[in-house]
Image (cartoon, rainbow, N blue to C red; front, side, top):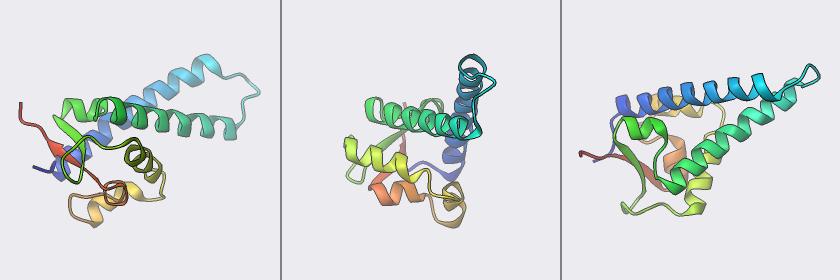
Length: 123
């Protein structure tokens, strides 16, 4: 069963808070007075990319998905390929992409474009 919009929103919220905290630590301990805004933006985008791509490829879930009992799968309910996970992660950088959850059904653009979906696991 595909995950509800509420679970999808909670996934996003939990993961956003987690990435924000990781980025805060990264900036606090790795930046210097000469660090530019562009460097910070690239660091945050890199962290976001590594977080989602790594978690969803190796575990089929991020921390948010783990806490909401959801899992990323392919259209035919199999483990998604590395290519699908990478495309899914790149699509997260489309401007206004998080709003696609409000504009469409349960499928956001990063699901549709990568041929993946998020399902609820009742365990």
